[in-house]
Image (tube, rainbow, N blue to C red; front, side):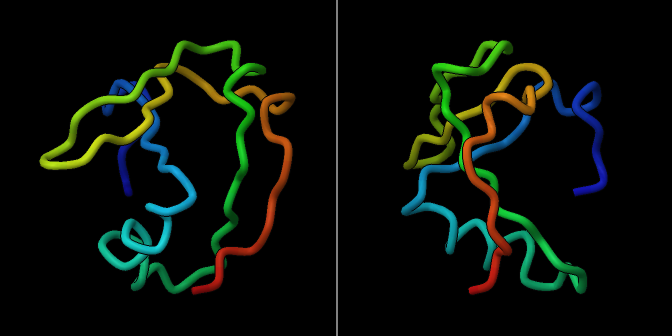
Length: 78
């Protein structure tokens, strides 16, 4: 939160089973509506990869997420 793609170098993403943990750790206090994007990685025009983060791995998108790669959106309510 509060950093641009240029500052961070990639967009943090997560697999479906990681969403709740990421929300609790970083977004529970957001105070504004959040939207969960489902991304089809085969449609991404930016490179992506799975990187180790501590004892887990997370997908990271190394550039902008093109709209055509977003196949579903829903309010993020946990």
